[in-house]
Image 1 (cartoon, one colour):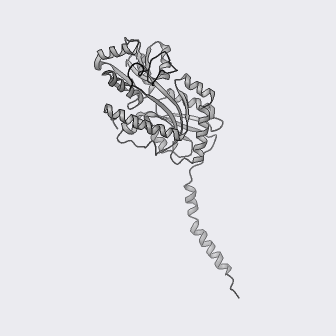
Image 2 (cartoon, helix red, strand yellow; image 1 turned 180 degrees about the horizontal axis):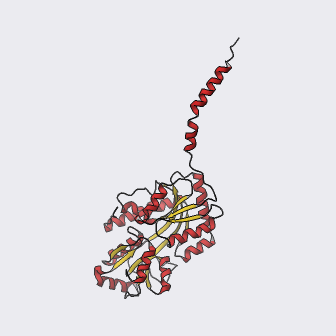
Image 3 (cartoon, helix red, strand yellow; image 1 turned 90 degrees about the horizontal axis):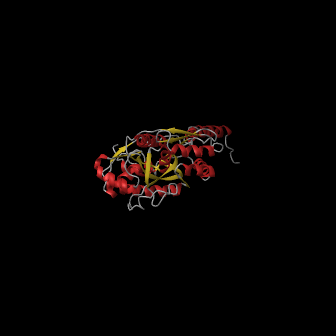
Length: 334
């Protein structure tokens, strides 16, 4: 007759097995990413001082997603040309409650500009949405004796290196638009980098710096003051937002083209379901009539591209800006 298993022995083995597996349960639990909690605040880090175009974009989106995601809280982390904000999001918890509003500068220009960049724009983040793109404009103080691009070129050539131009940061489209115009027109303007657009606008309106390459939206904001003039735009054709002005290309400077964009990113290891929820709601917001109108009124074109298109744009821009930086022999100070 077969011998039945000893019940005591079965209980002992079961207990030992449970003890052996017990330490694994907390470990597995600890490795799970924090859960996204709709309704809780979502912090959006922006790498420039408050009051710029990036704030306008995020506030417009925040109004649309408040009920579905929760409040978007703008956290302006200026300094190090925006790298402080990028690094903070890189190390943030991947729970969907900390996002980066990345710029073309941070995510496609800095890899060539800085030898010791502490992040990889492609590998260290989860791309969500390319929300908006924009062009730039040549803006000059009202006392600059030029009312057209041709008159400006003539004046700047005569001044040699006595003319300075401001940008909203070293290694940004604003900076390199000035460098491209220098090369194309034979100018010797000296670059003056600012920590964001707000202080640069204050100085060009005050005459501290005579020339500033601003976003079209920023230039539009300054025009009603009567303290600046806008002479040309940086797209490959006239901007529908300022159709009265020629582009540099139209004026004979075919290589003087600069466009840029604002895109949202989450920390690496953000769960796919969380990333998809954020992505879907931000795209819905950008495509809404109210947000589109606000963007156009502030010099931005709505885009609403998802991650695949965003990464494609990033790779193309990284290659383009690397070539431009090599041509002008630019290397930022780490």
